[in-house]
Length: 334
Image (tube, rainbow, N blue to C red; front, side, top):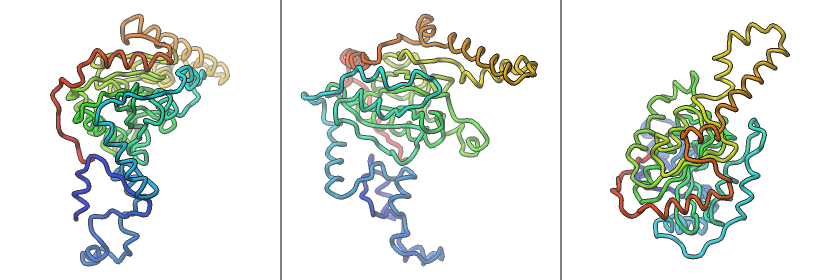
């Protein structure tokens, strides 16, 4: 039962081969629940994939190293730092909007060299949460993962994001959202997961944030999921900007066209002509929802050159009083 106390920790670092369980083999057998060996109870692979373990390391020496790095983010800025040539950010998002990419490469490129510490990588794969430094300043990053569910926010991704927001808020760490999502996950399985309650955590937690927040739209920014990637509203962050690849709307373009122009598409008997009409309608919708149009109507603040992202973040934080805020000293256990 003592493992319940472990669950109270802000972060759990475990070594490969560890076991974490609420009860050992004797207790399990005594409860009439079967006979198991110690290695079968709470193997770390299970606890890593279900979110109990935040960071999995090879050995105790690495665990100590990671623990020191984790604590360092709460000790103030570093005077010495370096970073990649920021022009690389122009190349990380494919020009073809249907091609995916690795958002972790974007995070690594924006951050100071060797400053990224990702939490809960084994759980909630739709979302990436990490501590980074930018010009020595500690920042929490929440990013959609287009390699899983196309970046849609599912139930566990919502829980993962909400808890990380609470963690950053409790310690005065500013938050940077990297948005590329078609919205919240839908479908029968999603409803069975209790998505209605899980996704709402992002808005409730966002409404209670007191630290500075910032949002950069990398590509897709659709529906309420996009608002969740801005602390609950595009009017909340210090800035909401987009890279030139950004596209903004109430729902994903393809789905919107299929629903809004169903009769027109069904009226075309030839499949080739139907596909041509569909592509034409999607292209028109993309043009209307382009980030430049959104910025011209003040839906977002600006469209920026990706290489200027760090400069904008630093300028924003220099104008914010990161030390003068009311802390909400509460972090969910899960």
